[in-house]
Length: 332
Length: 261
Image 1 (cartoon, rainbow over the protein chains, first blue to last red):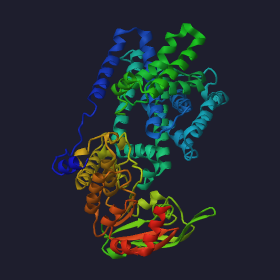
Image 2: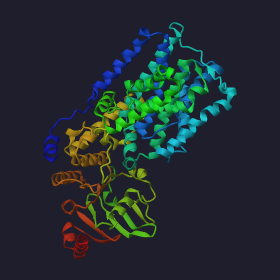
Image 3: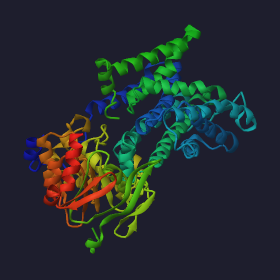
Image 4: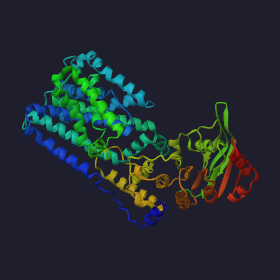
């Protein structure tokens, strides 16, 4: 290094601004993905438009788990809790006060954020398996809370979300494109986060907590921040899901949906890019429909797929690594 | 920095004692690290130099004694709060985030100075953009001082240990600290890399900066430091210039004894 660094270092001019296109394939992959998704409703029928719309809402949920993994190094199996908070916020606001989705879509992530912080503060000294178990407690509690509090939540039946944003466009297309817009906005915001001061602080705190502390960033700040971001995305995902599927019920936010989110996150290699999130969401939303005839075999397919992804990932199979790189894993 | 009475801004440990259960590792250690000088902290394995270093950074809390910087009490403050007093450090095992570029790792060194809020972390707001451009420029300047600006946009995972040490140094100095604590900066470096490190450390030295180096590499310490504390069995056994330390019979005995063992 010595000759190279000392001879080149002083003289070589370095751009004061950063190279913008570090990941041209990632950027083009995102654009191509948006283009394909934007045309799908015109190519596919109403059923698929609905299903893919649900997948787009779930993609935000997959990202919420991936954010926790990438920026916090933690795993959650309780994100159905924050999703349910966002979804029921949208449904209850409409039912009780007639508040439309273009307002309640901001309340949904706020509800997730508040609950996320309320959960993260007492658990800020937990990490790894201990935190995962704590999130599991949240996840398991969701159906019980919803059923117990049936005067507000509609109990087992749940609530209907009938509102729409405009009468010009058909309801189905509204659902689809609003979900797509929200997903694109989330991916964009997360890309900015990666390069922000807070993003750099979170990444450093995750990989070297002591180094972060030495520069004034406390680990508890990092844990609260990451859980706050993650839970608000989960809340937004839930709110979007309520809007897209026109209904909320305890069944949609059972403990297994938290597991599905984690499966989707693993299947997307924890990447925070658009194609990866859509892939992860497709795995958890569309595959079950595809395999619906297989009935009881679905969980086994899931287990096998999950195992495959994890084992191949660890073995470092070059093809998978390349696929991961293409999906933007290395560029977050 | 803004401080004019630089001479009074020394980092001091007074009568610091530290024990882990029944194991006493520091016995009332008195040390002073004045600004404008590079002070070495050496001693055989188990002498307590790392323990003393960790008391300075805040990782360990001494049972008795106090640690002050420019009159302010530091003992009792956690590491993150000490950063606010102008303390910065490097790590024995390089602690850089491998997902981030060299420049980004150095920019993290400025995180404490950042003002832009969460909104500009997610949205394209001018305040965040300005802060980021400014941080980038300061990071590049720090890398230029260490002659590794060419590596700014390399990913940390792609670099060998020598340059990584310098990146850590750049991260430590970019926020213009008043105290720089270096934990075995030459660990794992070959002789060429050590030579570069020596040159870099000399370039960093400034009249108002307190520099403390814990190091095993005796050649580096002797060439770099203005004065050296020698610790053995948790006590200071010598303080002097490199020449004085080299001639000190007690130090020679400790080191020869340690080498023989």
